[in-house]
Image (cartoon, rainbow, N blue to C red; front, side, top):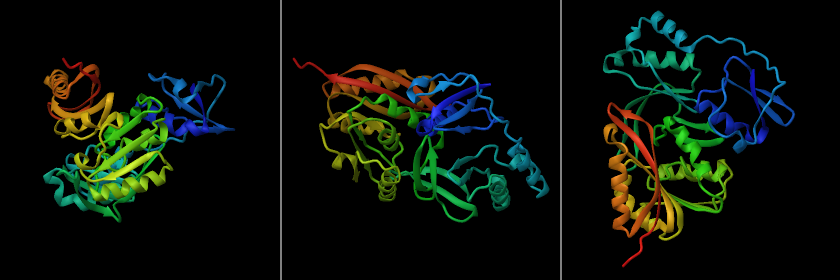
Length: 344
């Protein structure tokens, strides 16, 4: 049995990382022992255990977890008993806090309410929502409807960070957990960070709660998202964040940051803002959507060109694919370290 022992205060952080990589053994109980938490794992993690002050526990023998019925099998049984064709049922769902979000095909619409009821009951959700057409407009507003339950506000916990939000009013991408969780560890102690599209605190909160940044300027245009950002700062008891409401072109101070986060698919249109916000040498965390066959060459060329246009040069660049977004389209990101270019 592979068991990791970690101090209680680090348990939520390492559990979030382990679950992201599918490493927690579901057949064995997670157990508290004194000031430590013992976590059963399936194999050795790829990340450093020292980041969480975790160690291997060679003598632990944890109790097996009572076997649970596969929820997919229970869903199929309930759908069949209600006369709903299985080929119309959602094959996947996402859970944000106590809310389950589904996507339905047009042919399933006549069964929508009953599908919502079944998924809510089996998955023990507060509410089931249908995601009708994704996120829209500069305010990144979702298009959802309630299929079952009552209330669209919830608190989602991810790697020890708490996000309060209303899924009918603000976006939340559950598929970006690895990106959100990892960013805090890359920012050096004492750095100043500018998050140009903070939302409810997607990147700001992990950096503030688990990183050691001196200050974070968090800007958000959507007034509803901004209200949740301020609420989430209190919820996570962080004090090193300066929230700014409005267009980042207008309200973000210039020449203040060592790191600039462009967590928006329109990031290329705001690279000029990012360069103005840097206070010299620094790093821009850049996100975009693009054709998979053009990754990473098109993105790196675009970033190098933008740097030259602002009398900067790329010192290093680390690119990655965050996830597949649509057939042939990927959500890509890059950490671009830049420095001033010598002027002749």
